[in-house]
Image (tube, rainbow, N blue to C red; front, side, top):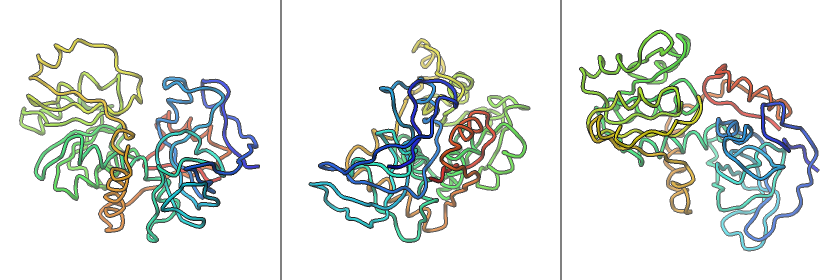
Length: 324
């Protein structure tokens, strides 16, 4: 038996229960992993609330790091004792141990700790595909990245700086502004006290930016479109404030023939080659010291409900992990 977080209905943080579960043995293509640390991400809140549906009862969590305890038939490239990490479905990372598909695992370099891996796999690979694949940013460009003091945001600030890109980050407090600036943001906008559209236009001399990365959703979507230059790209990759309302595609034409995409990590790491390349790029950036993973909150696994409440209340900065 192992401890795990399970939910039998959707709702607030209170629907998560800390229970005993039977782990069992891995089947074909599977391994059993013993977690050392588990990552907390906003997508977990979407599944918990029901915004993203899944069959119930269910587990939560898409990111973790630990050691392989058992290997099922047909698994190649992994063995008992390997240090591994992962990000992606199926949900169920909020647990001490689990049986899971081996094809989403990557081996951890010795220089990267379990805590760091659990804090960065989903967020770090997300930044990798956003900056290096969805829209390939170029040295000297100025871009807009919302929620710059969050886990994804702080990694993006550092990655952009390493690439010679001027990142404009939005935040909700002066404290978060200082944090984003410290991690490499070229400009920071406190949207509580400033109009971010006006400030972006001011910073860019009225031209706008070639790309906006927006994980906020409903509250910032229209303003983000207004920050783009003609033929710019709107990258909507989250819904922290709620889902974006339906809109007419003519809105894109009237603002200068804009591009709009709604990417997700799974589509960028769907093959072993893609996963290894994306994770490898992240590992290289961390091992080189160009990116430091800020774990600013740690909670016991049993306190996952409080972790969700703090995340949704925007009380957290950087990355958050759960310790089984």
